[in-house]
Image 1 (spheres, protein in one colour):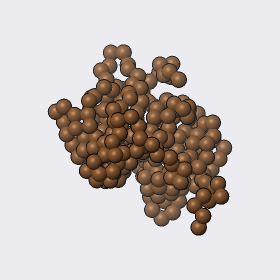
Image 2 (cartoon, rainbow, N blue to C red):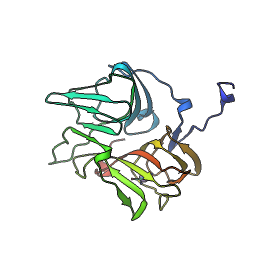
Image 3 (cartoon, rainbow, N blue to C red):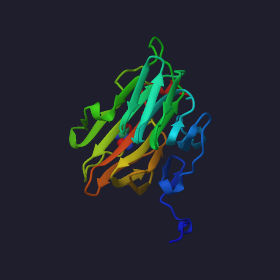
Image 4 (cartoon, helix red, strand yellow):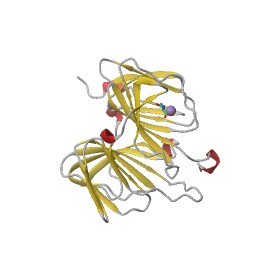
Amino acid sequence: MSMHRLGETRSRRALDHLLQTPDTFVWSPLPGMVNATACVHAAPALGANFTQYTASFEAGGSLGPHVGSRFVFVTEGSLHFASEGHSATLGIGGYCYLPPGLTHTITADAAARAQVIEKSYVPLDGVAAPQLLLASEGSIPGAPLNGDDALQVRALLPPDVAFDFAVNTMEYQPGASLSLVEIHVMEHGLTMLEGEGIYRLGESWYPVTKGDFIWMGPYCPQWFGALGKQPAKYLIYKDWNRHPMAVKR
Ligand code: UGY
Ligand code: MN
């Protein structure tokens, strides 16, 4: 079989969204990475107000310093987190939130992968910035979205206005879907963790599957329906808890 697929891919770039499928991922190290590389999915160059990348670690690999606040979610293998007074091993589904400027290391003993989100922190008058948070998706209870038990949302960050973004997992039983076409000011970075389905983005409908990444810009019309025999699950970032006039673009 030819490797170049005659220029075909499911990836699509539109003004208000990006579908990036693994066949189009391009890897390069970010400053300070050792034995690790990044595929940057969303960044200011795309029109996004945050950066999201897959970090791929070899044995002995580590991340470089962060820009803004950082959120790391392990998808393969495990990572060690260490900062003054704290250390933890994060397995699959383990995650951490790091406030801006927190000196830390994130290292891998063996091959591992993680989703990394970084964002300039937008402070709120009279509210202290969030502290370091280490947790695991498995310890977060799911809540049905709009009363639909077939669509469970897990909020990985606490409902505290100190956080200027949210990261959730959303798990759809086969046949479950969003109950409306959402159109909202918040943008999203989305990684398909399991299963498959159809994503409406803008005026297009795309088949999507595990490993795909999606960026949705502000006001991008969006809807998802799960297909297949297994649940579909994604990790989703959104900016959150700030007045739209306080967000610099
Ligand atoms: O939180 C959200 O905006 C979420 N329901 N959006 C989405 O799944 N595309
Ligand atoms: Mn949404």
